[in-house]
Length: 184
Image (cartoon, rainbow, N blue to C red; front, side, top):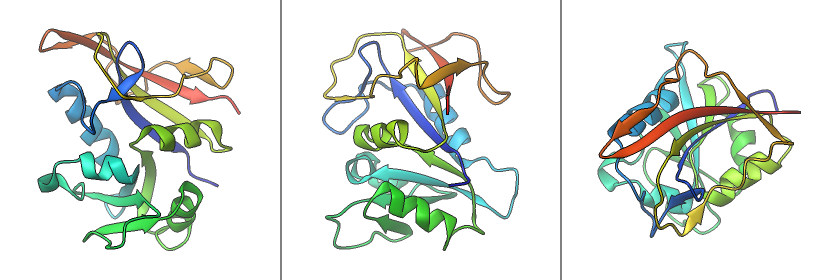
């Protein structure tokens, strides 16, 4: 597996990432960061792949599906109809194999964008990965959670050039961007 997995996620104080299939908060700057992270490429002839679970796919408002300018891969064993402009894979290894083979000439970076079980598999698996975490510094009721970022497996790194370092605030919610690298 040559390419690094980039996990892009926002989590609040209790590591919550969602409730009832939605984000518990609305942060325009975080959505802009998400779009920039998952869309921007160095090579103009390539796109980034976004890999997500079926529930994450359906949590994206219909008018924004598939995510524009990105290769959308949905993990599902249940979807019978493949949505237009989407690749379906039955598992994370199958999705990564698809990127490494059939889509290899098209993909620059791989981004995991949810949900909880996909993050968990990427974090616990043998994959090199980096976590781009928007740490929302507030309590929200959630029913879906980001697995704990273990100090033994991940180390916090200085934010790369494209990640703001200063504390952000929007809608009376403070948040900051943090980056973690898997220690292999």
